[in-house]
Image (cartoon, rainbow, N blue to C red; front, side, top):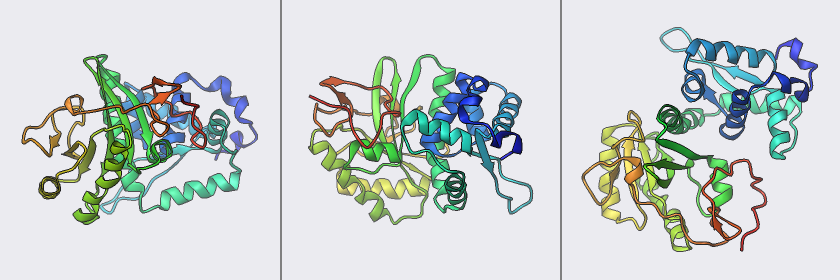
Length: 299
């Protein structure tokens, strides 16, 4: 981190943060890492403006970054994470423990070295595409974008790679994302449905499980396995090279692809285990900044 920023307390940087900067810190606090291109599509019209601002936030210690060399020469894009000051500011906003310089440095190194980094970036890419569509088309909204950590803490019985809510034409649909990288046996992939079926049987919600797959062959083989199993929850598949909002989703009970908004979706009943209900009322807001260790009181 640049020396000029090390002596500053995060609150001393508050007057230099725009609402867009604070939104980015919130995103990185929840989703850990985003590339320059992903941040550009979520927040900026101009790539150059995005690059300049990211460098400024890096200089202030609000962001940190890393990247790797390519096998064919050159470098991969910058991967952006919270800097120490950004991590401390976000921790204060969410009630999480304030990281020490050593703890934060170790977390960044572990993330950069993690074999799951490509999976995390691919999972985030799914939501980035939806966020970009929502930013450029006022008829759509990405109402909720929860990470694996938040979705697992809120729903308890499942462990999706992500959870979201999408609104188009006045209809809000939810889903659970399983971002497949082609590294697991299909039997293990299909077995993940059991947890979602138990969740639906306990009062829900009953959201479609979306298997996002690396290629057409993988999708074809998974579809065959799913249709043999006859899932008790909605299931749909698509590949990584598509727009997830478009008519790309193939369900297990049809051979016609449909858009995300047309997938079956049930927000579930008013039960203590369903985070869509707060104090007896259906709440389809983001809620991502609520503490995950203790849920809101419900009737």
